[in-house]
Length: 428
Image: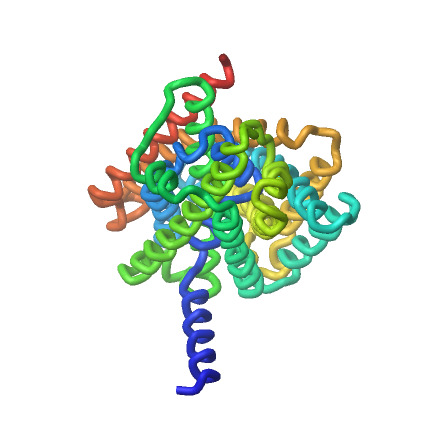
């Protein structure tokens, strides 16, 4: 076989793999948004390699939580807010949706600021120009681009997160310490270590990714012409099996990114005594004298790519939740004129996020508010998801089996402990 034929064959295999990956990959990548990158970078800088065991432990919990939401969307043909509206009290629905919307928009605003700061590390462009340009690009893609185009764009942006692997390798870590930190869980029972651990857990199991996954599973059904059948008959075994693989690969990708970010800052910032990093772009900036400009540039590229992916996920997630709450037409498959309220919420959410990005609000304080709301929402939301997916009236024969039920309740307990622990550290 000629070199050209071999190259073409590899290209086709890669494109086939990319087509196989669906909402799970995008959900996993969006979970590693700039605020999460900042949390992981801070964890590596503060605790070194001692937290490298956390991503492998969190991986099955993330997979279980996101798969339950994917199954919920596939079986009911509804997102989480839609299920709450149809089967539960409005007194439960409204507080959940309001908290989600506030947290999503605040986090989107902080992420826009992080994108601008990361771009300025590479190119000296005014922040105003960057934020307005990025916002225009994102809104145009969401409003006038097809869902298939949006999905392809998100997948390519997700692949840019491999830049963190490159940054970690360029940091030249001591691989024996890396292996020890990964395979031997160690933890210092003090306020700093506890707050860092629960912040990482709280960041990875964020409510917005659960809402997004359920909504995107419904979008995928609409795009494939399955939506009406899903509402009437539920999802087939094959569909749920494919969804499980999609979610598992997506969460594996997300946890690998988390792992290499912690590794990168542990090998550089922690080793050099720079333990207090307050944002993702600050971590990228601090890497230059320690690991070289290439490592810093790769870290910044990761922030930019995932930020451009995460902002539309956050604003669309707010729009899905509000549209489902009031029964409006909602789908990125619809044209603007067919779902005007849905796109109006996306535009308004984006404008508020831009205002936050331009405001004098400290981005760290904004992220703190978003993290607080997400953290308070996560435990009750996981309980709601577990109850929904065990409810025969809603799920029919697709209620949870013993294994996924056990893992789901373990995840719920872990999120609850993390949230209570984080609140305790804040109150001290």
